[in-house]
Image 1 (cartoon, rainbow, N blue to C red):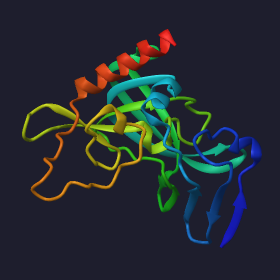
Image 2 (image 1 turned 90 degrees about the vertical axis):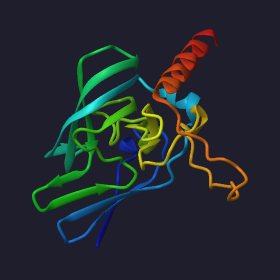
Image 3 (image 1 turned 90 degrees about the horizontal axis):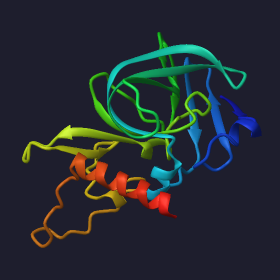
Length: 210
């Protein structure tokens, strides 16, 4: 196994992470990039830190070899059809670049960077596209899923790993272990997408007044 360290200049481009990033390279075709702790920015930090906040649908996912920070790397380009823009310039389509992916038999896996599937609907908090290894505020915190709730029929919000979000304070925060005792505390319903949009608007307005 070969171990190397990213340059300090590249590490300084990674807000939300501690400075050290290790790239573990093996003789096998798979490369694994392991990052240290991802700091949860909180809801306010997510909104203020994002250059663009939007809801959209993934239309395609493509992986290619490229040169990033002087290294030959695999980059995944994700294309989105924008459904609603909450912050930043409005546009009908957008593409974001993420370090990692699979080309043929070669795979570069970047721990913490969320994956995308064509057809899924998302809310993204993005910044520094093409400049950082992950163009999302808080890395995986910056991706939320939109799905139709089977019970209510409404569009609701989930974390990138499909755990439900029940309020805006869950966004940008690490999930808390469930403390509800069976039969004592009712399970909170997932947050509706319109409620998230309203919370983002309120936070943006509050930021303008601060």
